[in-house]
Image (cartoon, rainbow, N blue to C red; front, side, top):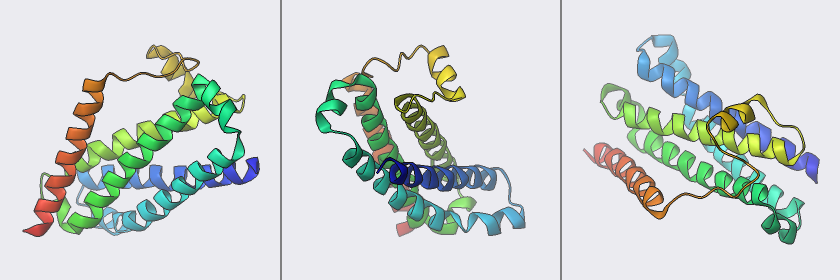
Amino acid sequence: MAAYHHIMAHFPIALLLLASLLLLLRALSNNPALAKLEKSTPILLIFGLLGGIAAILTGLMLWPHEAVLASPMAKNKILFATWTMIAWIGVAAVRLRAGEGIWETNLRWPLVILALLAAGMLSTTGALGGYLMGSPSDFSTLLKLLGWNVYQTFHAPGWALGVAVIAALLILLTGFMKKAR
């Protein structure tokens, strides 16, 4: 089962990171070639999200729940995987709802910021998976430099979670309102 989880985890990582790169490049440039390439992002986002959800499910089936709940690192992995999928759902919802017209407005910047945040969260989730498998990545070094001991349960204060939820809702609302016009 572990092999299935690895396959299910790495394909969505590639798809979602490519989508974030294309979104960033498209926001910075109106180059016709980039505009054509960026048209693939809705497909990348949809398949990346479906694969990410499958990766979460195979990961939950892989290890006994008692072991996962006893491990601070495994709890961090589940927490970040969930937050990551929520962030990518936000990116996909805004991009799909706003369509290609988003590139003609200033709404492209909140979308790109959310995509970059989601990409960072995805990288963190992957780094935690590497730790769990005994193979820390170079990204893990960055986490250490930022002061996060991944062997302890991550804690976010309630106010920080509230700000994150409000920011995500505002970004989504802005995208939906813009599409309605």
